[in-house]
Length: 396
Image (cartoon, rainbow, N blue to C red; front, side, top):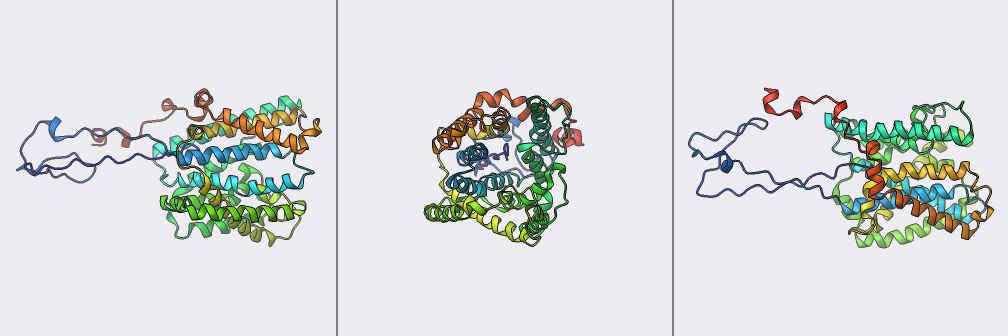
């Protein structure tokens, strides 16, 4: 999701000169040895210096991540103030349909190269597992202090508030080799999500209900290729996205008073929402199709060039983890319940601007550097060096 590698550009091979024979090599993984009739040359001439690897990030995907995380923060800020306004509830439903699916799709797309190599496992532990543990403890202690409830337990198996996403991303990425192996990964993931939606006794451990119901979006990202993103960025798709959002927004306005918001959170089975079991698979497939279409429309309108907020895309994990503390602080401090004007159109605009501005500041490079010890730690001291990283001399 957050720190998926963008890959390195392969340096062009040096052009062989016609006046000199091209030395042949042994099998991959062995040292290069010239053939017997090749002229002996100094090592510095026969071995070209490797080109420096490019670490340039893709501006488009950084833009996607920032805009998606801003929508997440704004939607969280709307929850306490939208009741009583049909338009606000409809807009909240519209955004909630696609903002997390779009983020998860991109996370899956950048997890395609995960094969379980030692360096990838280390990155999984330091970049996802460690932030989950630290912020799960931070959120739990903050709740204890704010509610003056020292008896509330701290459980790493029961994600609190928004930390569920890190637990889910850890599980999804760990199972990536499995999804890359099977023949029909997306239908299988949809089947699992449908089964979860009609199974009320899954339990709260690691929020598996959400892990399974959001799983198809991650698997869809694994199945995507660069040309698919080129396709959604075409002008025709951008134009089609306008009536799509207008139509879905109109439908959301019509159904808003009667819609159970639990369907959007995907943390409950159908029976828990007071409907028959068969509604679970039906709603799972319906929401998946709608979310994919809206996510495609959202991705179509994301700028492809570098903008003022492109640099913020690298710090979205900070914005995601920190904005929840701000929302919870306002909630525990009764800011929303004691200020009824926040539920008015003017108040909702203020809430939107404050949430968007706060999460933007939380994604800035200074905040990212300040939290690097927990979101991007090196921790080489904690891991053994694998034989594949020590060079050919060690392996021999």
